Length: 340
Image (cartoon, rainbow, N blue to C red):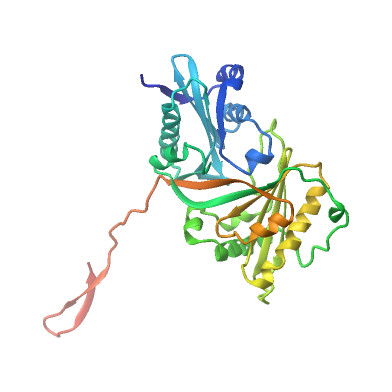
């Protein structure tokens, strides 16, 4: 029997809430799924309000009047033409085909709204990873999530580290941070993520709705230790939410700049220690594996491996352009350019 797929309405919340204990929910958007504390049903409620129709949407798979599952997608990095899949959920008795029906609907709806690509993060050991691949999602890199789940301030966190030569980031640094990102990130990853200098503005993170907990951001950087006064040597960001902290670290791989990474980690851990004790997480891309030994010395452990996937919904099309082609003038024997 074919299942019907439609947009979620507020009236659907009651049925989902009553069956919340019998749902299989796959949350697919770290770090926010780890630190912000927003439940999947909160995202459904947010997408149902007309005040935020452009930032989040939810589709349901229904059989007659029963909701079998849902998928939540949201706009990525404040770009109207990029979506990410944030959550998938089904009730226990829902058939496995429900997952595929929901994902196909998201791809169809995104294409109709002019979205050019959809991204998602899926645990490498999740059986649904193969489903994403069948639907045209490609793996552009792997992210290892490290965590210190029992992070508590120690004597090392009592005294404030000097923090030098780091300083607080401003919006005027966005271009230089983008150049740092471009210099250390593989081209395939850059193409998949499609970041611009605006993506690195301070506070350029999705703002939660009024009933969602606030996520705060603090970012720091240091100059290139190889003497290039116009470039950055590294960047570190600390996101703090109700359920934890998330550290992002980007740095040039040469010895001079890599040697400042321990100080950068210590500084943001000191910042985290002055909040309520919460787990601390750090995402390490497969091209940053030299960070793993450093994180181990700070009490972190490898928690999971995430496959970062992207599906392109639009491709460049070659168009015929006018060009000049030479031809021989019979009388003078000269080559003259003309439009081809």
